[in-house]
Amino acid sequence: MKKVLLVAVFLISIFISFAQDNSTAICGTKLALTQEKDAGKIKMKLPASVSEEDVRSYASYYEKMFTIEYNNTTHEIVYNMVVNNANNRRVILRFLSANQIQNVIVEGRLYTANDFYENYLK
Image (tube, one colour):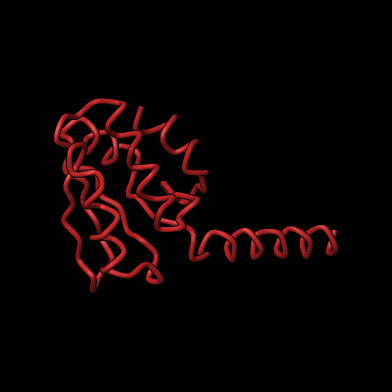
């Protein structure tokens, strides 16, 4: 029993380490994310490793789909959808990929960027 508990603690610590990786963004609750999607203003916290220069540079490619508000101190970004539809929200995946972000955490659960889109942005 002790070994099972130790293995469980070990696996949880590995998951937490992976989840805090530099390739992971964080969103709020499922309810908040649904409301943000409906309003066309999606909020997310980017990893500290992402530079403001990169955020603004990559976002400039997608201005027909969304504009951004970015706080470099807190690393929080708001995507303001120009036209709020699933195809334009999918472009957020390109932006995340350009910034080397592969995963998104929602309510403590880790999603790949694609699964995040399928579950919350589609």
